[in-house]
Length: 259
Image (tube, rainbow, N blue to C red; front, side, top):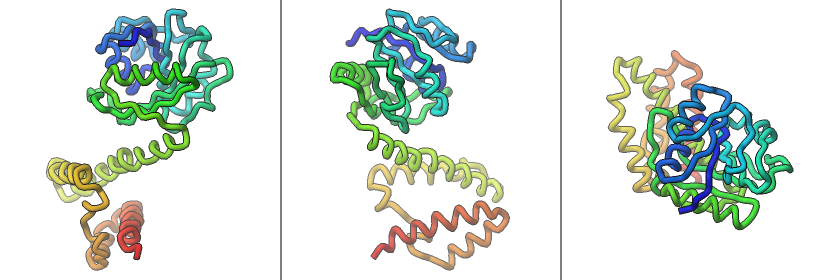
């Protein structure tokens, strides 16, 4: 096992999950830096680390993992103070190596391709880590770090990682929003999401097992205009939902009628 000591800038969902998993795997956590004393101290206490609101890291830290909201990443990186040999990495999927300031020499990207929540424990076994680094030694360190917690390493450059980040938005964020809207429509019919849960589970299971392209069903893939018009009429109470339904439907029709 690698013996690097790790500190975190950030105490949110990603930082919390990574920090706890690394600690459980036997790695030493030096310091948690966060604006929120409550979140920072809570995370620090869970992994026998210190807490600070200042981005000044001890010489004992070998790796600093910066896991903050995207809009704060550049500012946080510019304020980090650490020894020159410290490897500084961020966990953002949509930013590259060019966001690091010049004073950070050893740099990298340690992006776990997963959705994180405070109330759920993520299974890190075979979780994809998209990794990039400024030098071969740092790349090896990050690869070992991911493998120590069961992750599966993928060496991905910035351009391709950004595309994968967009893919993740479609598969995770857009799907989740569709479930939210579907649950709202079911509620108008007097039913909870529980009624639709078996359908959701089978849809995801089938997409994974057989491929989403082969698993598509419904009126759009059949180009069933009669049913589509009836659905649009039922959604007349919400122009926004009508627009969403219409645009996604036309996209499906176009995709499956390419010839």
